[in-house]
Structure formats: C-alpha cells, structure tokens
Image (cartoon, rainbow, N blue to C red; front, side, top):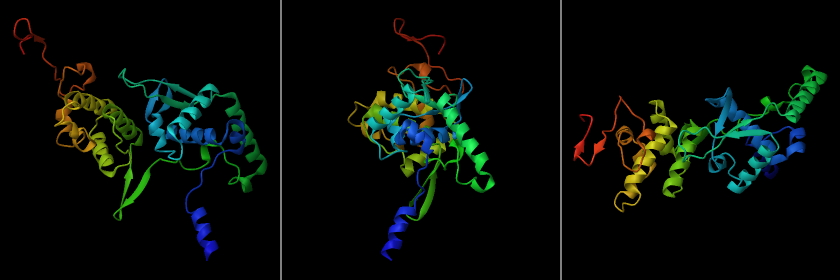
Length: 273
C-alpha cells in the first residue's frame, strides 16, 4: 500500500523531458528552457522579421519555472544567447519597455546536427521504435500552454499568458507591488479586454496614465490594482484620458480622438477646440 502511494506521487504529474544529447551539450536547465521556448514559439502570434518570437521578462519566465530564481533564469538565457542557441531582440513600441523577445535559433549548426542524428536513429529503429526516439518537436506538451486550476470545484483555463504576464509584470514594476499572474480575477479581466481587441500597448498606456495620476496620491494609490484598472466599466475611459506626464503618442486613440493643444500665452485652446 505504501509502495503504491509512493508510485502515485512519482507518476501523477507529467515529467519534464528533453533530448539526452541536447542535455549533454548545453546542460539540463538550458535544455529545458530551450524546449519550452520552442513550444511557446509554436503558439506565439508575435511575428517579426519573418520569425515567431516569445515576449517575456525574467519574472515572467518564473511563472513557468517557479523552482528557478530570476538570477538562475538570467544566467540560463545569457548562456544560451552567448552560445547562439537562442536569439533575443527588442521590438517594444514604448522605449521604457525593455522586455526582451526570444526565439530558438534553428539554424544553429549543433542543433541541426542533433536533430539530424535523432531522425537518423528513428529511421534505423523503424516503426516499432517511433515512440522511443523523439525529436525536439515531439517531446512533450509545453509546460504552460494552458494552466488549468481548480478553485471551489470550478475549473478555469488561463489563456493569453504571454500578454497577461507582460502586463502584470509591467504593473508590478511601475507600482512596486507583487500581483500574481495566475490570479483568477486578473485573468478574467484581462482576457475579457483582450477579446474586445485591446493590446499590450493599451494596457500599458492605462497603467502609465493612472500611475501618473494616482501613485503619489494617498487617497487614490490603493486603486492601482488590476481589478480597478482593467474593469469593464472603467478601462476604455481610462485609455482615453490624457495626462501631462504621459506622452500622447503612447495613448491609444479611439474614434479619432485628438487632445487639444493649449496656448497658455493666449489663455485658451487653439485649433478651434
């Protein structure tokens, strides 16, 4: 009985897998990260320069590898970048956003050689060995394609994880808080706004606007939270506000709205507004 319980503890979860030859070449942690980046790339809708990219911060990666610290993830990424296994870039529209974009360098000579070796082994083994020899593209499901969480007997699925992680990470940086990416309420609100067509830049614009207005206000700073910023009744109106602290070109213009120019020397607005 005890043995059966122990086996259940060992086998109840899907184990992480990676190519032994890849692990030998770059290390276990690096192989796991590369595998996850590969799967995230398959799901990504972020296409730049003809490639699919994955947009994520170090803290964002921690939601997928919670057993690694941000420093460990930083070292893994730097090692893979230095070795040419992954390529990073910055395609963010706002200059203050330094979050990197990543993709697997499938043209890497050693990675191509490993893939070729796996294909050759599969060919030698034949049909009976198809399930025992696996290439990079068929190892296992991604660690976080979708998170299924059961709360009060109700299961919900977190979607749009790339966008949600990047928005919450940005909010936490701006207000020095630790809101969770996998909060049920946060996921629901952001998924609703995303389904309405809003983008990462829209969410960050609202964060910029309300942070400029409320961060140093003892009365309103408490409202710098996902439940207020991203609510269905407030989000659009927040997005169309203009503050002096936020450049107008960073704010999404809906319905052709254009902020009036103010001529303080003449004492009123110009351009007939």
